[in-house]
Image: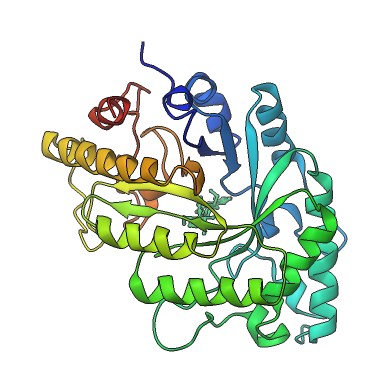
Length: 328
Ligand code: G3I
């Protein structure tokens, strides 16, 4: 039987997996053996825990927190402020009109205090704000209800509220396309502006939804270097390596080809070699899942198309990619 991932990288960084109430059952043995950190895939998001102003629903989130405790795993919190999976009520009054800035900030303060407060001592790091940067164009921030109603300051406020609620938690800004040069510079600019204003932020989360070819290793390195120059810790928060290029819309594959598995193995090896170089800056590497029997990529960007992005196959056996990084 293969060496646990968490043991292979114990001198380097934590090894995490995103989980949900189904996978903590179907993948329990694999998770317990290889991973020393978990993140809730959906269960701690705004819509999951706070469907109505007076109603909090923590059953599933609590289940995942209990799983982490049972196995002595670290727990990352995902996520407090996002444009997606957020219930509409927070932006509207009883008549359906938009609330004003004061009301929105008061509501998000209450949300953050309740959620962060509940998992104080369990969750060591929070993705406080997720995906707030615009992918394209000159605008720094993505357009969203948060931005429309509260102004750009909603980001700083979220970090302040989270810090009030748990002064010991590490607070992260988390985003994707994090290695894309233009977006990298915008993420850097945003985080630098927070630091310049003494806003409590401790890390940058690089989601790392990558594929066999993109992004280029040198762009990944440049992003790590640039973010690390801010003096914050870095974490890969949602790593997966799709076997398809983003614009590949094939749906006919029932199994990954040997070529795909080999290219994926080389890619994982190169990625982990690079990550190890930055072991002083990178404190955790979390996969967005654990094994190929379940991945969000089975539905994205092509609905119902199977993908095989992880180090373990659908039967939880190590893939060639596992062997290559184990040999590093
Ligand atoms: O719960 C409903 C279910 O009732 C319904 O029958 C079913 C029909 O589609 O949908 C279920 O909700 C789905 C939900 O996952 C729970 O499985 C949503 O449709 C689906 O959109 C949602 O996808 C999640 C996605 O975030 C939403 O944006 C993925 O599971 C989750 O992996 C993904 O995670 C995000 C990170 O939070 C942020 N970074 C990107 C990453 C990948 O998109």
